[in-house]
Structures are given as C-alpha cells and as structure tokens.
Length: 306
Image (tube, rainbow, N blue to C red; front, side, top):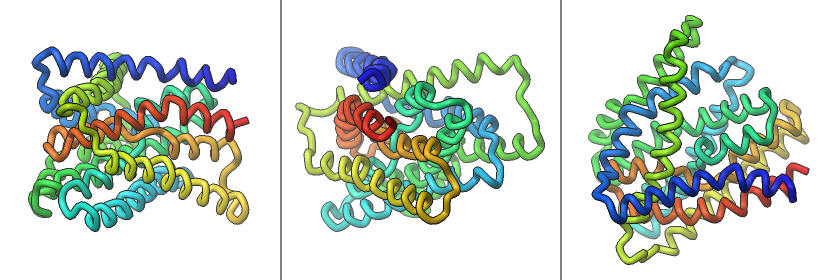
C-alpha cells in the first residue's frame, strides 16, 4: 500500500489546480478561450521545443514516440468511425480525441519521476513525445474538422506554432545547438505555467457546464477507449515483444504501461474550448476520468509493478 499512497500524494496537487479553475470560472469573469489560446500559441511551443531537444532521440529509440503516435491515431480512428455511426455530427470528432489521448504530461510525469530511474524516465518521456506530436497534429485537426472543412482545418493546422517548434527542435538536435543557459529559468517557468494553466482549464470547462447535465453515454464511450482499449492494445504489444521480439525489458514495459493508463488528456479541453467544439462534453469526460484516475492509476501500478 505504500506505493499507492506515494503516488496518490504525488498527484493530489494537480486536483487543487482543477478546483481553483472551477471556482475561478464560476465566480470570476475568466476568458477560458483566451487562456486556451495562450497555452496553444505561446506556452506549448516552448514546452515542446524543450522536451524534444532534451529527449536524446536516436534511431534506436525513435520507434517509441512513433509507436505512441500510431497507437493514439489507431484508437482515435476506431472511435471516430464508431462516433460517426452513432452521432453523425462533431461529437464523433471529440469522442475520438478523448478516447485516444492520455494525460501523459501533467498527470504522468510526476508519477514517472517517482517510479523510475533516469534511464527509464527518459523512455517514458520519449513516449510522451509521441503523444504530444499526436496532440498537436491529429487532435488539432480532428477538433477543427468538427467545425470546419478539410481545407480550413488544414489551414488552421499549418498555423499551429507547435509544429514549427517541433521542426526547430529537430534542427537544434541535428546540429547539436543548445539554448544559452540564461534561458533555463525561462523554460522552467513556461513548463510550470503549462501544468498550472492546463489543469485549471479543466476546472474552467467544468464551471461552464449548464446544470451539470453530463452525457453519460459520451463519457462511458470515452472511458471505454482510454481505460480499456488503449491499455489492452499496449498489453498486447508488450506480450508480443516479450514472447517474440525481445527488444525491451520489464522496466521499460512499466513505462509503457504508465503511458497507457493515465486519464484523458487535459489538453483536449484546450483545443475543444479554443475551437468551440463541444467543450462541455470534453470537460466532463476529462473531469470524470481524472477523478477515476486518482484511484485507478495507483491501483494498477500497485498490482502490475510489484
């Protein structure tokens, strides 16, 4: 039980930010869409740039972010197709993203720091890199596609600063360029703002739900994708490697499991809010999954990591 409570104490502060966001959204005139734009267009590019330039990406490890990206995309495709069948509107788009993207950053990184040594933590970060690329390409496109045509969505995607942050980071890695040390505190501050504002935005989104009329069918489907389909596919891939390929070891498998079990990503609320595509449904799914993750994640870790 010690590991359960250690993880619980590690993630509890994240919920305080959600509560503050909820109170602020309820009683103050907070422009949640403006905060979402601030995160997407100003803060996130710096965070992505820093994560990639410190990821030690190489040919031998490149498969990890690619695997995470493809897994997210596969789950999103399944639930988008099913969503189109049952909803026939933009709810299919947001169902796809909440089913496929996990909160590997705000929620997962504090837990990974607690559980893993530096080598395994780096593996986990590479996995989060794949999720981040998915978030800033497929998620943004699918969310925009809920309101705009294909061409309009692609035009919006081309204007997303995170894409250019990614390209600049690859250039910096290739030419072994480093930012001056004077920028270290700036980047740390940006990372802090990313976590705080990202979690608070969940609270902002929840505060705007009219009469808390939650769509339990939508929430149930999002849970099916994030807490069942995603981990099931990951376990299948782990067993495949364990019995056939033998590329990774048990410790690395644990990093993969953590990637799979974190709750729905808080950033889905940001994109849904900025693009005004069912932000209330996304916020409620994120809220319930985050509350569920408070118990679910420590329990799974306690069972599988012993």
